[in-house]
Length: 146
Ligand SMILES: [Zn+2]
Image 1 (cartoon, rainbow, N blue to C red):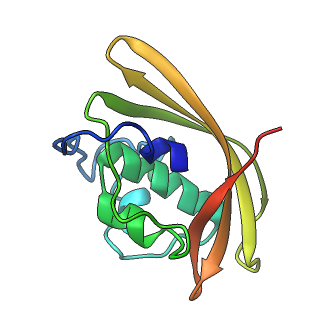
Image 2 (cartoon, helix red, strand yellow):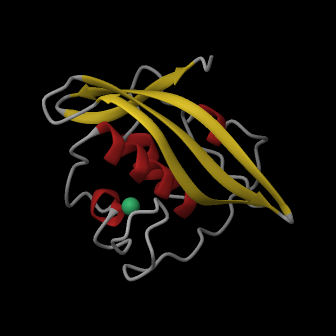
């Protein structure tokens, strides 16, 4: 998910409006408030690596920098997250997962993140690695696709 933030630096954009009743950007059927919103508000911790990955996609969609930083491993966490104001994260496809369950310490999630930039549509494919840090799932880094 590094590539989702390592685009050109841009001025801070207003966060896209996301209400508790909005469809959750991560693509699950629950509303944002009942899905990733619980994690963003700190009311619950993502129980699996996949849930954390989905909540981070939603945080990119909602420009929730604070959540992205606190769900990033301190060894790889950037100082800030730059959101490209012209880019909208619109859809997430989880392709596969390994481990990352309630009793695992590590896990990976391969996904495709779809975005629009003006009239153009694009997709970012990544295989992300997650670990537990102080009991909570955090994003560590991206594995090389191959
Ligand atoms: Zn969600």
